Image 1: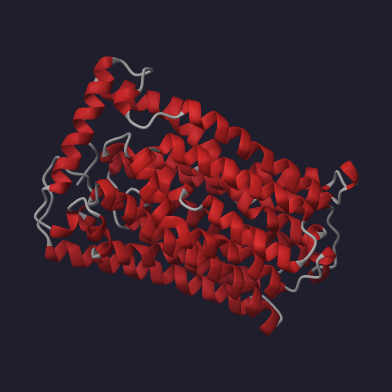
Image 2: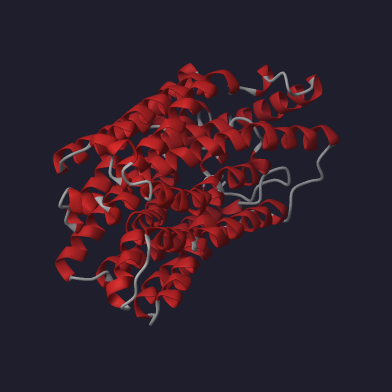
Length: 455
């Protein structure tokens, strides 16, 4: 199918207001969220690893244990958000994780590092799927890819701006008598607490309560979302019903969880180990980088990734979201990441890694427009949380396994081949799911979204 039907004036203004008023703030929350969870990757090669005597496997475990804490409370947290409202729950999450993140400033042992990383995961549990669910409840499905794409820009931009910021803060060594990496933890944690307090007053749980929308815009959004939810709840497929059991018994949810596993495995293998790999360029290529040099090099792959993400999601929105919008980038990423191992210079290596980053970030917001197409209510909350739980399992696995394989093999060849394998597996599963549903289900009507294989 082609692009969406022409929109009305009320529809255009309502979506524009949400894009300007709501999405940037939630994206800023995501920016701080991702910076806090990956700050350890900047700290390790810039003093923390030496001060705490960390091996690659220990650093991988410290990075990955965050996801264990997240997994434990993720589904309950998202169900609490569904019950109590996004405004209260997202604000609570931000303040809690900001306080835990602040404590990293004074970590003095590997055991303390493990404990705080676990508690950070517990504190952050439910934020990302909660934000996805929150935004999905504000716009009809035909606009969801665009809105989630704007939201997702925060993730690559966190590294574009966060890596130089982290480098600058690390360069403030001696401030308050702290090592540079401790100064970084101190100053990247405080914004989470501040934003959490602001979120309590700024966020609104549903369009019907938004005073910054006109009455016509509120009525249109309320009617569209209600009709969409009624359609999903009344679908012949018993798994489309809006209850918790439906999400856990839905085969599509589990396959999508495996697809997401592959993407997130690649995402966090890069996020946690790219600064360390860049630090290794100095010995590998007999060169020297300052702290800021390493920070800027780390940021390089993520700016093109943000640009590709923006235009890829716009294409999917305008021309209809297709299976290849997710499977295609998975293939490119799966092939490109092992190629980075065979480049003969830092420039060529970072260029290939940039292709991988572009692939991962192009696919993720399009992917997240899929689950809410066939789940609603509590099932949507649980289904999105379940899929993201698979991503958190991948985050732990990518962090720990990459470090362990590096210690075992002596280099990053085996770990990055494994990244390529999981991304190619995601492409295969996405294509299989599309083919299976295309033959098993009737084609959608013209009023439905064009991701026909996953309806």
